[in-house]
Every structure is written in structure tokens, then in C-alpha cells.
Image 1: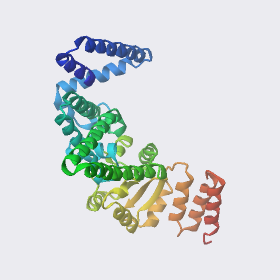
Image 2 (image 1 turned 45 degrees about the vertical axis):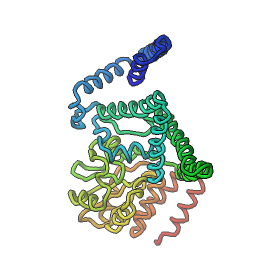
Image 3 (image 1 turned 180 degrees about the vertical axis):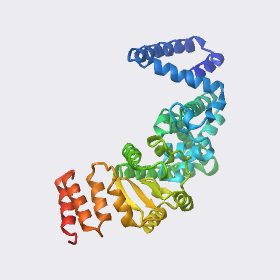
Length: 381
């Protein structure tokens, strides 16, 4: 739909309407081929149903505010707020680990738009702006209608437009620098800004490859469904939307548990609580402090994945009581989880020994198996 909107505007204002009509014809042919392919694969019915539902929501905007249970995927969908758009949409799209680089790149994109307008490149400025904004808004609206959480990969198609505006911003820096301070400023200013951004991107890429962000949230959701009781409190620290998707009983809005006080208030509501702590949790200002506090309160750490853990907390229970309850849980077969439970049960060597034996039996390789054997031998009888 955004593409046809752009072509319609182009048809109205273009001086070469035959060319625009030819492009529209090619787009229609491509769409027809895609439609026939989808129908032949048996996806025509679901696609028609989804499209009709989204069209009805567009015509009746109040449907966007339905409760999660009434939406097709029974989720809340992305939050409609500037704070959410800034930190959940723009930041992961641009650079996840640096707020300074986020605003610097956005400033360059805005400068690029201004530079294009000053250079009277109105069509290019209009085209890039529409390419960047319209698909993003349509996708966010669709996810809100469906009740599906947002992922930055859904808007990767807009990245070329954003980078084109950033490039125009660099050109503007060079031109304005030359007018203000001559050739030296025109050379140094883009180099300094570009060098800083390049360093941030190199650092960000190294983080991605050194710490592979691949969490098994499906495993977490399955574990909670099997073991959490309806009266238990289940929360996640920095990742509410993801948990809501993989564990539907959770319905917290984004950023609900971003502070230690909010976590304490949530855990005070029930006798037993489950706290999901992922690789993104330490990024919060109080993220590491929350982890320390949970350990101090005697919460038991269950390492379900190398990048994600679930803390089991009892409001009026000591660690030994919680560990005894965990022995009755349905646990996934995972050597790392067994080893973590063995360490938690150090005060009960017999139980710790059982978990280490399970860890050894399910170890992924000989090196890890040898590590568990050493830990088992070190247990006090």
C-alpha cells in the first residue's frame, strides 16, 4: 500500500506519466505473480482474513485499543509512545549500545534532509522521507492490530533511506564547514564525526560476535508454563514484550520492571515469584543491582540458557525450602542447568551430587564433562 501511494503521488505530479504508468503496470504484474504463488501454497485464506481484519481496524481506529485477549495474536503489540519509538525502534535500528551515536546519526539524517531541501532536491527529499516513515508506521500499526511484539528486522527495508539521509548529512557538513572555516574545517569536521561513528560501529559489531545474542525464549516460556502456578508472579527485567509473546499469561507493558523498586513491589504480591533475567537486563541503570538484590534475598538462579536465567523467589521462604520445591519441577534436559542447581545445592551434597551426575551424563563435550567431574569430586561427603 505505501508503494502504491508513492506511485499515485508520482502519477499526479510527474511530467512523464507514461513512465509512471509503466512502473505501476510492472508492480501490478509482480504483485499478481506473488499473489498466485501465495494462493497455490494454500496461504490465500489466512492472507485474505488478515488483510480484511487490518483494513477494518484502519477504518475503525478504536480497534487498535482492544485488550490483548481480543486481538488476533492475543498480545498487546508495540506501545504507542515517543519513548518506545526512541528506545525500542530507533536505537536497535541504528546502534544498540550507544545513546550518543544514536542522536548523532539521527542529527545527521535530519541535517541531510535539510541539506537536500536547501539544494532544491525536493523529489529526493520527499522520496527518502516517505520511504523511511510510511513503511515503519504501517508495520507498527499492523503489529498493534495483530497484537504482536515488534522486532527491528521488520523495518530493515527502510535502512537504505536512512543511510542515504545520513550520507547527505555528511555532504552538508562538508559544504557548511567550507563556508564557515574553509577547506580545513570542511575536511576535519566530517572526518571527526565519521571516525567517531566508525569506532562505535566497530565496537558494536565486535560485541555482536563476541557475545552472540541468541536467547531461547521458547524454552523459557515452556518452562514457566509447566512450573509456574496461576497465583505466582512472573516478571522479566527489560524484555516485557518478548516474555508476553512466549508466555501469554504475562501481560506487562514495556519498561514496567526497569527499576528495583518496581521489582520489589511486584514480588510482594505473591508467595512465589519467577524473575527472568536475560542478556539485556544488565543494560538497565539498576540491572546489575537487581541481580545482586535477588541473590541477597535467597532467590534460586536457574540457568536455562547461557544468556538467560530464571530466579525462583519465595517471599517467606529460605533457600533450602525453595531448592526442595525445585526438585519437583519439570526441568529441561540441559547440563548447564543441572550444574547450576548442583552449585545451588552445595549445602546438601547428596542432592548436589545427583545434579552433577545428570550434568555429566548430558554434557555437550568431553571438556565440559571433565569440568563437571572435577566439581563433583570436590564436593564434601
